Image (cartoon, rainbow, N blue to C red; front, top):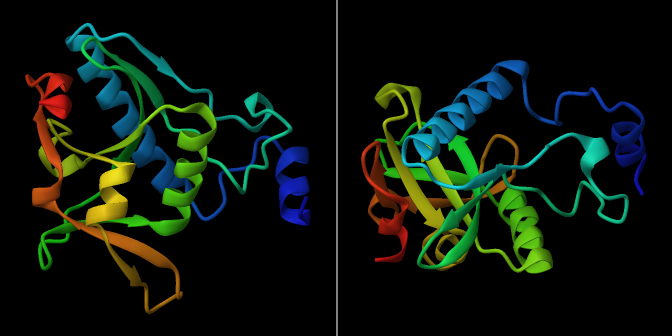
Length: 176
């Protein structure tokens, strides 16, 4: 265990690393909006507790990431959903997803045998439209890039590779 992991475990009220309180609040709004959408459609879901103390000590926080929700799809079973509030990069018509986060979510997917999907929306459309993509599709369709300012890797996925779900649309669009 690294010193950073020990610090996180000892200081359970710490804001997640590399996330400002403003980014946290925006993320919480997105999570609330997708939950409202799920409730509107009467979907069964579980919201994962994201606190450190709810994380089994056998998992190192730096190796796995819990998604935000588990959602039941009648025709398929359950999926895990990581919710994001992001603006579309209109220059390249894509969304970006950090590679480190993808790898941590893949750890969850492999450990629990639950497919993970990312659902992205933004305040610009009042969270009425969601763009969904599975982790497996991100690996296949996302183009690996490196951020110039900090050298971190990310995947750029063009919007046409996402499945668009509006407020009145059902999650069944993911499996059509």
